[in-house]
Image (tube, rainbow, N blue to C red; front, top):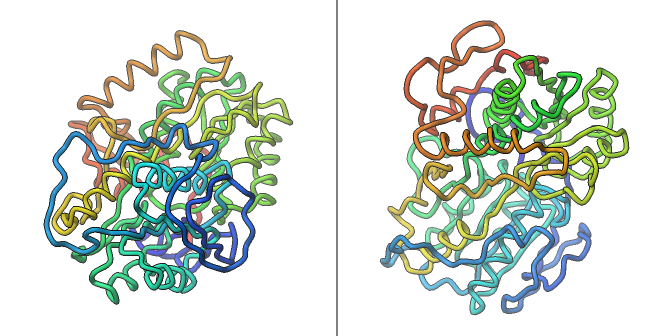
Length: 419
């Protein structure tokens, strides 16, 4: 999930690559979740799998109740689909959740070959891997990391009959007829988790370890603090960046530094989540998860979290492409979906044993609000310097939330890196 295209905050870090791995391993949808090894190669069999630890939340339903658009668009009658991941499929985080979603596609479409590639950097290596998948017959590719957008656009331009959808970034200007981006409103369940964190802290100090200061991560940090303030007006969120999506050594140092400052609840926006989760448990701290269910790593300190359940959305995209209806569809755009749409692929994780009934009731009330006309960013919301991030009035649109989270809200401790 590197940062190559979005809004001015992303520009300075655009040349960085994720630290999750540098070599691509391409396989079909595997029958077991074997440890990743950074070697190159491509194989192909028909789809079919038992899934992963995260697959239970990934969903398996193909399509949805809504009518699937049809036509003669790119990717029609796809027989092979590719998925590329920036890190390993067993990272207890972003890539594991995306891999589980790919296996939901394999289960729902047994006649379609599903290719997967792990540890694909956000550079020309991504271009190379996608080109290889196309040579192996893929006519639909899911490029699942933030920094995969530029390679995705390059490959899509060279192959107008192939659909490439990118996860989490935003295309500026005209969207090509064979491309789209998609994502959930990640800040919504993070806001709900913040409520639980604020209620749980005894020190009133929460920790947030994040990778890069893109609006997506800033929105999460802000939502987390806003949720914490709702249950505990004294709660503050200490934000520390690692400048890497997956660097266990940096994560461990960041967690240790936060614990030394009195943090007793920690969360993160990192691709691989095991390091910080284990560090919290070992230090006797509490932890809020992200990307995938890592509660098994912190049986004592787990509070709740947010995790991806990609299966249904992935299958809707696949069904639309196979039917020839991609061009002009909702997926041929910068598609975002949240709780008020009833289909957010980013959902709340299970509660830990320490979460009280009163906290659960408060979270349920806020979930109902968000699911109707509400938003964590309904103003007035002020930035650290007292300026207005979101004015009073109606809940802001998804696009406004993504574009206007350019500063930390009041209550967040730490500065956004410059340059």
